[in-house]
Image (tube, rainbow, N blue to C red; front, side, top):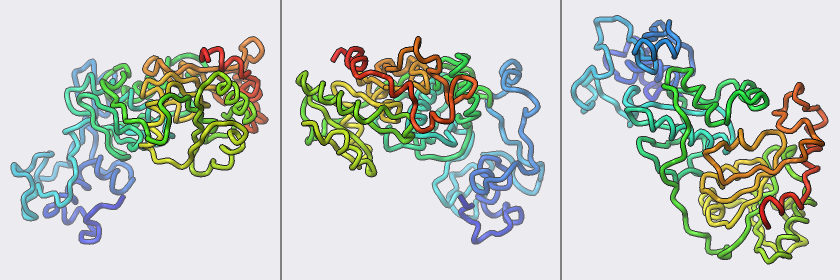
Length: 382
């Protein structure tokens, strides 16, 4: 993202006395990173010589503060001008609607899919419970969490200000295998604490609004989503077909769900059944379909997390990761369905060679393929 005034002011150090944006770019690390993606300039962080734990013990601020360069020719500090930036001649002038650092605690995920964003929602709610100022979560998938309501928390589109929860993905996977961290939302919380935020625990949103059922769906139905962005996480298609037929034989309405590029695959799974299937629907429609389902059955995918957010009883067929780590106690309605642990000692391998993962598993997990249809029906009491 470029500095908004870059076309008018090529040298921000020379124009920082006249342009508030140049001043922010030159003196505030948050804006320098936002507008250039660069490293720290000549200015320093206050308290950077202390670890997060030491700052807490010494009573220093939980998050690092930017210390402006000591130049008497320009005002120092965030509130250099008492007015609200009423005109360009004022040094507090902001020609665009932009939020100054320090008024809110900003957090974000630098990477990750839909499921990671929803895990981060629980982390953000937990942080909002312990902070004395507003928490702003810059979400990678904001269209999927519009029904979330929680005090002291604001969800905005993706940005890169503040604390980054997506740190050391290899370490996250290793902690899942070694059981050194209870769940992914707590892993994200620990990453923020390591960056100076207080220690805290994830929490569910105070409220998740339930959208109306889409008019083209029946009153009672079981929602099946047979696919994943990672094909190796998918239960075999013929087992989804078998599961659908057995559900229909028990009197259930089955609805299949996929994205824009999965229409042909949906037809392969559901074409020989009486079910209906939808693909390429907008996020708000998918959320409404999930929120009103009597039950959902999925692979390890983002939609399993959406179902957990809406507290829909859900079965997630998965073997690469442990369900208790992926969903944690903040999504108690999601239950994992895995293979027989006495037969497969690689369950929850986290794609780690030392935990049983092999290169041939990239073409399909043998343990996942071994999960029987009857086990899914039995655990779901279907």
